[in-house]
Image (cartoon, rainbow, N blue to C red; front, side, top):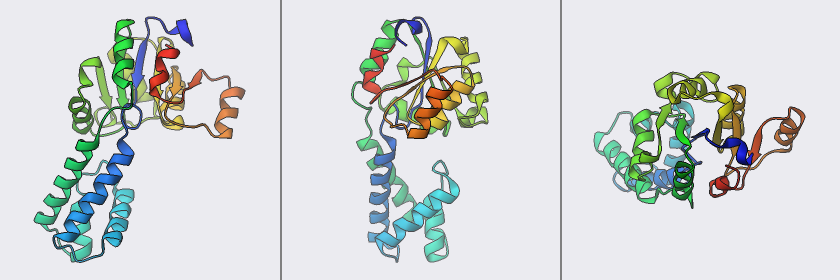
Length: 231
């Protein structure tokens, strides 16, 4: 890619691209379960965690009442005390551990100094995604932050990428999407006419063949800290 991306817009996914959301979320869920079991939920911790995982799978990770459903399934009714305890523990642990991947801020500073416009395109709840960026003091770097909740479409639907391009006032052929999910971030961006940079992930053999056979404009980097080597 190199110099071909001079004076172009760079869009980032947020979760597991800029910051390690998944592993911290799992630790936070375990802590929350342990706390509510110790404080009265009449079930073994491992069993409670398995039920919580089922609820998350059913309702989606962005559903706001996982612990409400958990207490209702276990004891037949919602327990406000245990729900509040679970939610508070989850958020306290998650945000105490949350931090950007190494060199994320350095990469954003580098891109700003090079004159790039910077945006975020993310599947998720708008307030939650802004909260992550603000807590980590990443928000000043972004010209726009666009969520699936706001647009009504999730990546890889082209509409969310097209809306981001419109708001940034830039064309697809002058833009690149940086993300950790091949189908969601990279192929979604490619289908919207953008280039893609896959980070923090590994390609399958089938994906490698797809890139080669279809001559897709995709660069694969070991992690986000290497973005400045191609932009």
